Length: 117
Image (cartoon, rainbow, N blue to C red; front, side):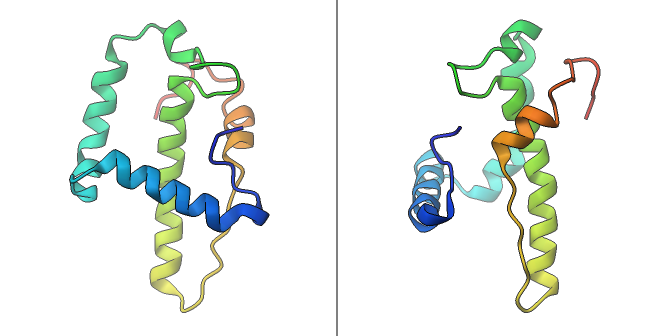
């Protein structure tokens, strides 16, 4: 499970910690600029990695590079849906999902070449 797991009993504190970690990572950079630069940066970072390196977790219980990249792609889809809900409704229900469960199950049988985005 990630360090930023979000059980309902700790949701507010975890959300604050998550936002603080994003602010720290951004520093003085504009979030929209960073967002626009992210795809090219990801391609550069993973370009020299072997399939084994892409699939190896940082440490036990953590995600691999491949899982992180897949999570970013999945999160873009989820974020797009959530943004549309917020823009289109007065009081939208914005459902959450268990990202660790998704990472374990949705991509469990894929290999680097069996699924292309």
